[in-house]
Image (tube, rainbow, N blue to C red; front, side):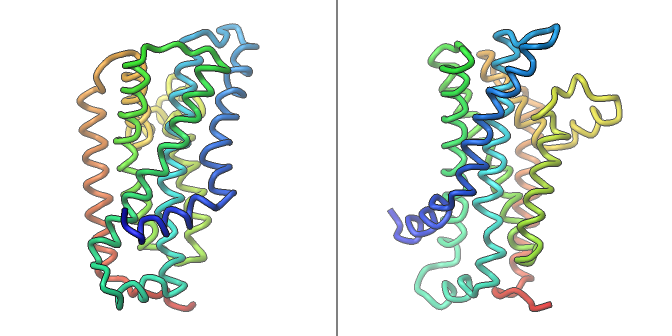
Length: 246
């Protein structure tokens, strides 16, 4: 295992705020939202509990992917990236480590929220469905890792912290992770279909139902990932390794 990978993983994983907002908070939301729906006419039956669980798994993974990768802006400001440039570590390895850390840190919220849904909300899926659900959402989180890298390269340190909160909220609220898209008015429903978070959750819902992810959802995620990754590479080539004072 690469020493750089271990070092970068520890930097992010020991951040208590990161762990709270990406692991514990989605699990708490999973219980909260099902209890809220339990008091409505429709109730929080097995289908609603499973749908809420999938949405909160997606929400946690989005936050983890963005939080783990947008730190590039802080690394630029501190001079850490410039320091790495003068070491024998190839730049491709540095980028690969950032991607690997971002992907790995999406797993804890996926697993913790799944356990919450199973043991606290009584969601029952076959073993293959659980594995497929976590696997699909883990692979799909690559789109948000790519988005986080883009934001990390494009933004300065002072803007990055606020941006991750705004972007994460927009993706969750308008992508149907907090409220089902079916309850949106027509305009917002159309907007939801233009966000990667909507298609990301759709792949999870299909997996939870024991079905293959919709081709349209997979195609949308692949397309978003390619665009974000290409833009991240383009911005990285044009940006200095240290933040510009302003």
